[in-house]
Image (cartoon, rainbow, N blue to C red):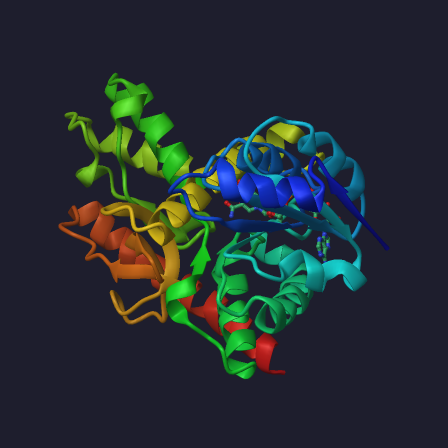
Length: 338
Ligand code: NAD
Ligand code: LMR
C-alpha cells in the first residue's frame, strides 16, 4: 500500500486556501474506484471542476499513476492518490462528497443483477468505511446494480447509526443524458436545450424516461416514443455489446457522474434551484427507493419532486417496473443484514 500526494506540498495547499478560492468554499471529493474505466475520466473531469479544492483518488490498485498524471493539471484542486485498504481512511477523511464507481462492469449477455455477487460486497466494505471516516459526506453511488447497491448502502449506514437519507444518491444521470441525446435526434431539436426526466431505477424496464414531459415539445408518434423508451432502457446494453467484452459505458458515465457531482456541490454551496434526477429514498411511490427529480441543497436532498402528469404509456411503464425494482431493493436489504 502506498500514498502519493502530487501537485502541491502542504504549504502550497495552505497558500491556495488563503489566497485563490475567494468565496468558493473548500470541498473535498473522493472517488472510490478511481483507477477504473469510469474512475479515470471522472477524476479528470472532477479535476477540471472549480468547485473542488481537494481530489482524493482511491482504488485497490494503480492510483499513484492516475493521481500523478491528473495532479499535473493546473486547476484549483489538490490531488492525492490512495492505494489499498490501509489508506482508505485517509482517502475518506474530511470528504464532502464520495463518488463510488468501484466494482466489476458487465460483459455481453449479463444483466446488471449478475454483478450483485461481487459488487455488493465491495459496496458494503466501502460504505462501512464511509460511516466511520466521513459520516456526513454525500454519497454518489455508481456501482451496479444501483437498484440494490443504494439500499445496501442505506442498511450499512443504519447499522452504523449514521444513516441520513438526504445524503445517499444512486446516480441515474446517464439515463437522462441518453434520453436527451436520443430525443434530440428524433425530435430534431438542439440537444443542448433538451430536458427529459427519467424515473424509476437504473436497470432495463426499471428505467422510465418521461418523454411526455420532454422539452422542447415535439409531436412524436407513439411508435417513435416506444422506440425512444426502449433505446433509453437498453442504452447500457448497447454500449456493453459494442465494447464486446471490454466493459460497459465509461466515458459517457464519467460525463454523467461529473454532471451529477457538480449539481451536488452546487447544492452544498447554496446555489438555488438545482434539480437533477436521482435514485433516492422516496415516498413518491410505495417503493422505499425510487428515481425522480430531486432538488439539491445544503444538506443533500432538499425535496423529492412529484412525478407530474404521465401519459398512459408511461403509467403502464410505471406499474410494470415496480415488481423488479421492489425485488432488487429487497435483495440489497437482505444482503446487508445477513
Ligand atoms: P472497471 O473494472 O474499469 O473499474 C472498476 C474499478 O474499481 C477498478 O479500478 C477496480 O480496481 C476498482 N475496485 C474494485 N474493488 C474495489 C474496492 N474494494 N475498492 C476500491 N476500488 C475497487 O469498471 P468501470 O467500467 O469503471 O465500472 C465500474 C462500475 O460502475 C460497474 O459496477 C458498472 O456496472 C458501473 N456503472 C454504472 C453506471 C451507472 O449509470 N450508474 C454506468 C456505467 C457503469
Ligand atoms: C450503463 O447504464 O451504461 C451502466 O449501468 C453499465 C451497464 O452495465 O449497462
